[in-house]
Image (cartoon, rainbow over all chains, first blue to last red; front, top):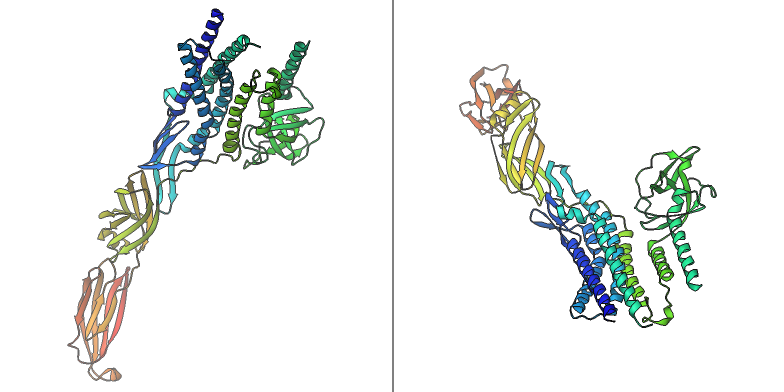
Length: 193
Length: 370
């Protein structure tokens, strides 16, 4: 009986740690600047927010606003997972097993695979395309002559280079879901019929 | 026995899903299922739509039909057929501005007969997967194994799909256009007899910092501006007197001001046309005075003037005695007015002024009434 309980506690701890690591990684990915723009337009673009300036004036880009809204599902998913993970670890500290946490973490982790996939899909459609259309030379010809405003250049920080690829995060979300599935299956095994 | 049946159902289901999703790419199947991945067929097909195609060997296609052609196993395109000409076909995406390159009709695999939106087919697939792999009875309540899990999972899935549908699939992303600072020409004018040329700009979000280059050009003639200064959105250019003199000598009236301005962000290079209206000197006899005004920014050479007066008056010009008075010429400075006193002439007569204008010698004759 004690061994079984210890077994479940170990699953609870591992699943909790995975959930915390995954959700914190996602939350970090949401806020780290992915693209740093310089030149006519200065600032940065992250998954969940952006700050771009022309001179001293803040610029609003509707497409980026849309992209920011698209990070809401994954943010909610990750926050819920973080709460579950923190709860699981806290229960583990007090040597108590909570089956409800296992039952909630399993679908949340599974949903996180979808959230991560959708998140990256929308990133490709929106943020990637916006950045692609922003960078370049800004030259305008009008009645005043040739107005050479300069160029907008883009730089991807090394850390962002890793997170821009969906593979590491998808792998992490799958791993998290596998651990959560194992925990919930073990929990069901031990539950009275 | 029950467990065995369930296992068979799962395997059959998996085979069905896999074969329906990718099978059509490898073998000529009567039905093919493809998902749309871009906006090229918007609004007919949106990204994520599940397209159902009937094999081209079953159903014939014609111009105007939406067809699926596969270049290779990994690249299949769903576009509208624009032209079929025996061996080759031309397609176009409804949202694309131009046609695709021609391709062999052999590559056409399916004719599209319908599409299911993402928001319908994906939840159906997911729910069916859940029910096949985690069989639950919805009538036994949340306490039953995996019912609550399914419920939570579907909430998150629905949240993702809703956002995806609302924000991504409704409208194709337009190319982002920044509202950048701009500068346009408001007006061009010359002040105080061409002594200053004003180039007035209308700027939004830009400020003129300095003038890097200021040139005056007319045909092969090029000169530096003598001075310039910035007054807000205006640039005032002072051309050297020599430039106007050269224009006058060369019978030129049109010229350009070429500016390179440094702005607080970037540069502006502009050529602004100006026309100088060369005018003949204004001559008049007013109150026993000959008044000569030079309306040009260059000196005018007055070659000389003559006064012819008759002792007996004009009516007997040819019978009476004619007196003639000649005076040497002088240079009339730019915009100078000179008055010549004619009070010494007591009878009626004529004033004849000879001057050069635009390389021509002209004569002006005025009447002197007494």
